[in-house]
Length: 204
Length: 292
Image (cartoon, rainbow over all chains, first blue to last red; front, side):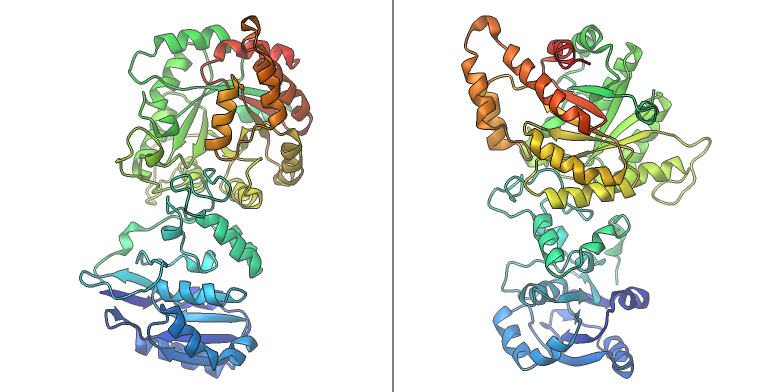
């Protein structure tokens, strides 16, 4: 099991820029989704006139499925300045990769629970750290894409863009830098120093 | 003496580094350092360099300090969590160590304990920030320190010839924001790349020391090219070393190349960091040839 929990109100407000398209993933049954809280927040955002559309679906971590579902919302997405995803970390990463020129943000943090972890068909991984970093990394998880799980940028170990630990693996921070540049968000690299909080895997 | 004092006076800072032995008999290393490195501003002491377990960096720093040298305590985040790092920083302050260099560290898998747990609780940026917090008298847990807080000159590294130069510059900026007061670079063999890098790095207003490795042999250069991130020895330099086949000249070419690189790059930076890698005895010759 895993649990997704809404990020704090201030955190979500700070992410908002212009018009927003919202994706809810009610996921695999192994994920607990904060349905009521998400709905209340989305109602309020809609009331402010900044929402271009809302899509609620399941298994957005399955890219074929997600692309199919997103198809009829493409005009709403085109109108939006950003996409706010309410899902576990895998879902956000899948959407961010597909909508590679869009600002894609995570509205939730993902926490682990013992038991079956659900089905994700792809290479994207969520560490269930409980303090999702995807909003400062362009939707590429630094914990799983970087061998050292660094959260403040690239180490000096990349050679020809490959990781010092595994020459078949692309440097995660090289990918993050490229993505941030692509979506015009290099300014997030000037965010405050990030320090992991290992106390977040509390009994939620 | 803190390196920052020398930098702020506009003086050239020359540093080199020593690697602690795999054992606790530090005397030969200290004797060699005393003989060849006494006139140098400061000497880095590596911290389990290349993820190979050795005598501790802090203990070696104390031994060098007692021998009259000015050590730079290197700290990596590979094998200690934030509590151990903070505690070691306080220990360093107690021993009167004034200069530190904060690094993320190589991954454990690259060294001689590949099965060890890679820690990386902090990284170079958050470690610099942590030192800044201790200097304000608070630890990372938000607890107050007792008595006068420690005060260090905080350094960091950057890789100017990296093929990910934009990502490196972004990280450098984060290090400056986190409190880095000087930088030492990865080894440079391509002055053009270094000069182009300095053109962008000078905006941060923090002194940079050119990093150089003495190219000992053709084999070493090939190894660096194949294995060491951010280091590229151009073919012309390798050919130059190849031409040096007379036994009597052994090593001289490497010394000459190093001195030349220093001369070419020095107008663009604030100091030099020589990684002698066992050739500490050649450091005085390099400095003389480079006119320092």
